[in-house]
Length: 352
Image 1 (cartoon, helix red, strand yellow):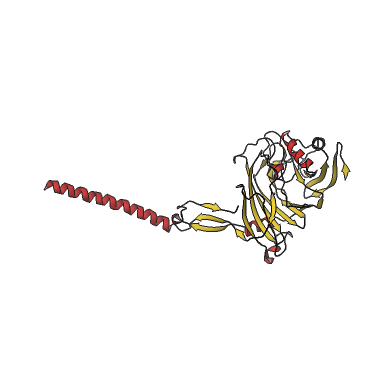
Image 2 (cartoon, helix red, strand yellow; image 1 turned 135 degrees about the vertical axis):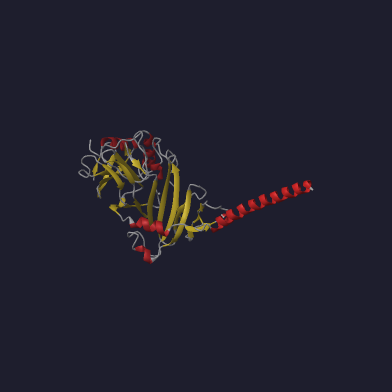
């Protein structure tokens, strides 16, 4: 069977013992991936451009990935610029505030505060588009049933666990499409080990609301990881200036707004053609656990309000803490001295 690498944003099932991929449905064994993922979601005029940069380590012949999208692509997958992510991160960094024990934080401690992602196949699955981006081949599929989709995966070398079937069914019932990426033949003919970021990759599709297929990433068998199977995604939203991207469930503590602000003309050239002057940039953080059965993260469009989270950091000066320690030590000395004087007076009185 041909070697395959599938790549995307939202997972489903893995083979037993395969670690989870933070932005897609990974398939294969012996893959090491990071639970952190950055995603840029550009939503304008009912078209979403989805930019992601999954990072993995594994043998090129042993893994795969699937991405569900709600409609046919309006822009085929293409390589984007890493600078778009570094710029979005820099623009939305929290405000750093130095604190000391007088602020109720304490010397040497810290905390943070924030606000409240053509041809046909047998059995009812059709290949509606295909192409190549970087060293990856991709196809877009339309499945009429969950069974026809899993049959296609089996026929084309994408192993999956039975746990993933319910998630596949979830997207099939919504009428969504699936994107499957695999490594192009000849890139790693010996099945060598790769360890790098795949992308960034940008693609566009029609959508009446912004979407991040997080349900795909929350399914599958239990994985072993040092972080307790918890994933943290940063979603950077870019919209027209009259709205901002946000979470629809503002009461969910796992969904946090970290930044919202207008994009300046001087920053546009660093965002890989994804933004114009006056557009609004938002920074959202989503955390969830592998194995969750929650639906896709709920995103909405809200009235724009400038906001930047505050991150409290220990003071760079030790003067206050040093003074506090000195004062405490001085008090202890005075108490000890007073005790000696009192004892001396008592002894002197008895001697007389």
